[in-house]
Length: 150
Ligand SMILES: [Zn+2]
Image (spheres, rainbow, N blue to C red):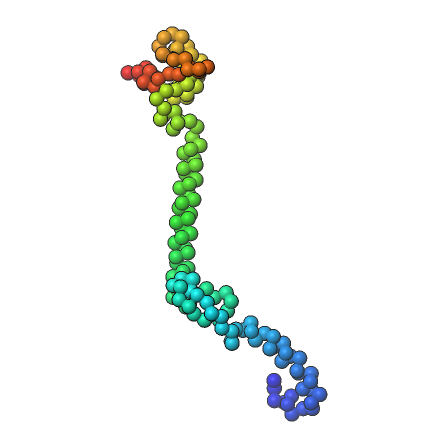
């Protein structure tokens, strides 16, 4: 408040007064006399925060926490990437499942060699592949197929 105003009439002062109230309202925002007991999110030490958003006891912890968070994000990103890659592997049709089986259906056998089911059926009929009836399916031992290439 300029001094020239003080020297003027009281009426003038009344006009100035509302401005002061506004300033008072702002004061807590400036956090000059705000003390919030808090626990540092990084080191766990108790400290007094000046703002409600303060999470760390000091710059050191804030920086360390920031670095840790970045590192965590990086790890998370790698994990997510790995998971996506694994998903891709799983999505590769049947190959893995078929490769691990000792006994195959006609369809699986055809997938394994990369021919049509009819080719497999024909080979069974020709006696080049031995298929064992298994319920409604016919099962071909994996070694039978591998034998074809020996
Ligand atoms: Zn700390």
